[in-house]
Amino acid sequence: MDADDRLRARLDGAIAVDEIGIESGGYGIYRLRCLYQQIFERRRQTLKAVAIMGKVAPYLGAEEVPAEMFREAVAEEDAGFIEFLSLALIVRNHANLGLDTQMLAIGLKDHHVRFIARQASESELGPADVICALEETAVAPSRLSSVAAEIRKQGMRAAIGDFGASRWTDEQINLLAPEIVIINGDWFRKICRDPVTVRLFDTVVGRLHERKAKVLVGGIETEQHLGVAIRAGADLFKGPHLAPPAHVGSEPVETLSLRDKLGGSEKIVPLYG
Image (cartoon, rainbow, N blue to C red; front, side, top):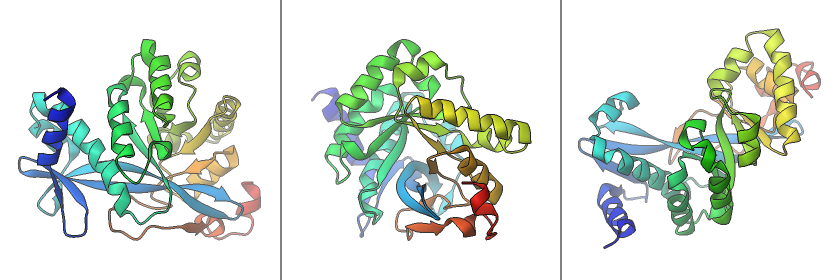
């Protein structure tokens, strides 16, 4: 049995499927359950759900526990397996969301690329609908070009997953050539506190567009955050103001009224594009 077969066997042993097909992962006394947050694109005066971002959360019984508590409980030699288990759950449960051809954005490291491609090929999702969101610390700069090539060889899309929170250089961005750049939510909310940095954000989005990348703004918690993102020309939007993270089985949102999400004022919509 080779390494891939051993990993597959261990995943099969750790994953449980409930009576309606929802999968969760077991590790000791903990269970890993999937959460998904919808990503929206502006369509005139509406916001249309076009993709989702997936993650897993640890539970003890019915109660979610802090991620740090779970990480401390994971043996050092099992940390890599937990990463693969989490990724497998996110891809496999996509079929249970009741969504039609919505892309899946998933954060991963460079050595996960082929694993994710296999998981997607074996599911109803397919590699073309997978967005591989890489963080700066997850890929050595010397490997960016080869990782980008591998992602595209597998038929998936490359994305930067933590722009603003990490120090991506122009050279690194050019090497990865991401189709999508995900603006870190914490960083974006800090920008929104000051009119000067708000104006500078317009320039940031413009420079990313020059590189042919779509800009996804995360962390949108208020009407003001959404307005800043729209005014800057962002392409995609994510945050609890639009739709909070939800478990598999929750009713997904298809469209939102832009006017409602900007506060219902007739003056706000023209102001932000």
